[in-house]
Amino acid sequence: MYLERDCRFLAAADDIEQAKLVIVGAPMDFTVSFRPGTREGPRHIRLMSVGLEEYSPELDRQLGEVAFADAGDVIMQPGRVVGSLSRIAEVLRPLYRQGKTPLLLGGEHLVSLPAIEEAARVHPGLAVLHFDAHADLRHEYLGEALSHATVMRRVCEVVGAGNLYQFGIRSGTREEFAFASGNCHLYRQWDQQLLHEVVQQLAGRPVYISLDIDVLDPAFAPGTGTPEPGGVTPRALFDALYQMTGLDVVGLDIVEVCPVYDPSGATGILAAKLVREAILLWAPRRR
Image (cartoon, rainbow, N blue to C red; front, top):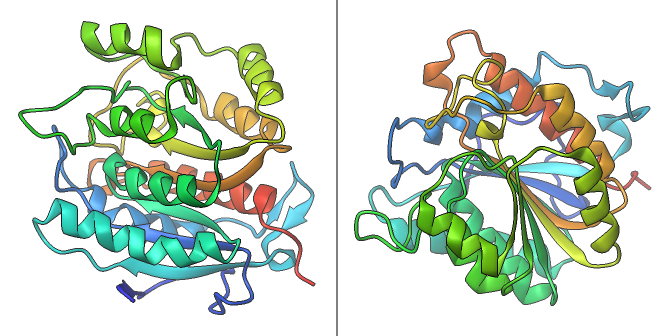
């Protein structure tokens, strides 16, 4: 298996066989269009996690009570986009088939594509909830069909029209917004009530959650490769996460953390807390 590990997320177990939720890092940033460095995201999130408590007052649960593990990072093939995406798929495929929930740490947003492709193979009728500043719906970017700027267009092709729900979007081309109007549910305004209605619609369906850290305003999360002003607050994003508690989440990711642009570490600790809450929401209790 193409995995290596030099640090673990807070309180994570080593025993993947006994875990129901498994963290996997995808340190890839080969197609970034502005500022590189997201390959350092998975390790940084893990390192910053030690500044957190294991206990969540919001959820009244703690990490030691739930069955999760950290498998480490997928070993990428430098400069080889297709080969690296294939490695991510090979690592995640057996996890899905064993009924586990992968939690992928990016890395650029393109790493979500193999995760969603593998989820869709095992979970027919998959819906994708996408939180981001950018639509990521370009057909191609600079002649490339595989890019962090095209990832949700490829995802839409995987899950089918009408099964992609996008929140927090405030950047994209005219063509992207035109494509969205006929092929997916793109919500430009952050609206908790609207999210609540979507969550109700998706009840009973398998769901994959993809969270780009730049959905947050760069005042709160400057450590990202393509910051976009006008984003949401951390409080709003945590509340959104809690609204999704009852969904059948079969996989999720947190991507585009780029620590070099945030010496304070605030973006990393925020991402780590999002990871902690996601674990506590969707990892079952240990037996």
